[in-house]
Length: 143
Image (cartoon, rainbow, N blue to C red; front, side):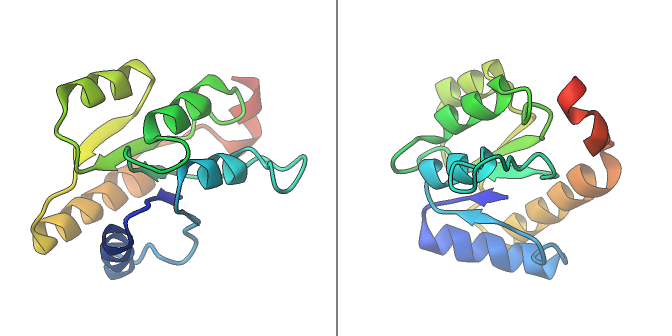
């Protein structure tokens, strides 16, 4: 899942994901409320999105900010084991500290240079989707 409100950053991220063969099954949310609605099945009752392998989360979002989305993900037993990577342009130390305090799995500042950004996405893909071993879907609700 990609949560990004900036159209340019969204397109850049999707381009980098496509370049790294990751754009097949990406749900895009353009604000924090849309992300929470999808994650917790607020638009489709009784459906939560625990099968997500990764959430790429911007911080500066309309309606509900990224830290509130992170807080909701990590405080709900149905979603708390989903890896969340903050991918943001924020350089604020308080954002980094608060992100980790709330349980983010990784905090990455978006590189300005496109090639560096594409390499960052490649490394994200390699680690979080190929190297990292998440708990089996059948055990996620019992943790």
